[in-house]
Length: 292
Image (tube, rainbow, N blue to C red; front, top):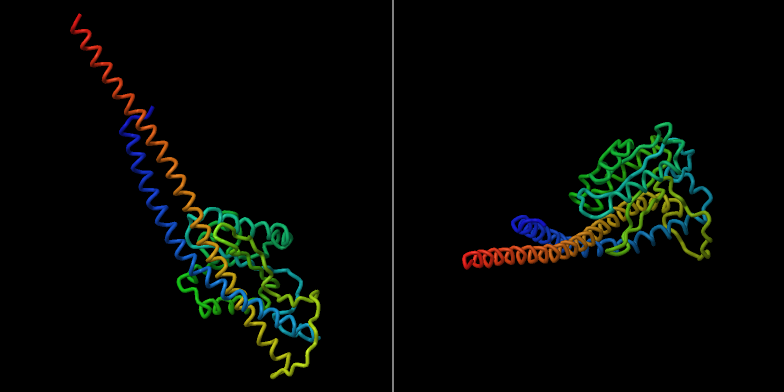
């Protein structure tokens, strides 16, 4: 059995750890509320914008004229992986990084074999995971979390859109954690470019609407805006999911520390009782020896 001093040291260490994990849990809970409000506010807008886009495109024959809807043969692939800059959030980063690598090795196996798959990493943890798995990370955009606003995100999205427009990449995929609730994150992969206009969706009933400007002009304006909103929504989703995952992980860590503290306290009391009993026996034995 471990000595009393060693057990006391472990108890003090576990108490300190529990204080840290409990504080991190409360901080993540506060951040989660703000991030959750942000993603819940933007989702209806993003969905309605895409609905309008697909509704209008269903009645047009030349929507493919847009550079962002051109479905080229996927020879060069870019995967944008969205993770977090910090750890201590359970399997949040490892799971989504694994999902991205799985996407490359299955859907884009041929391109990967010829070294035609590149990664842009948003989040330090994702970049570390990708480098460990031997993926080609061409750029890191970790600083975007310093000020996660639509204006800052739009600049990054425009760079990605330009790389597709100039033919640097034939297909661009987004891989991120979609927020469901504090305990659940949905591993998500989305084709970012070219834009899928939903050919298989049922055409909406034609109403007698007057469009100003024309439908074609409206769609050409909506496509870049929809892409930027989609990208921004993915980042907000990932941020909310990160805070939820960290809050859950710290909650579990706090509970584990509490359980361990109970075990160590019981172990300490048993060791202390055993020591006291031994000392009493020594005193009694000494007293009996003196009598003899």
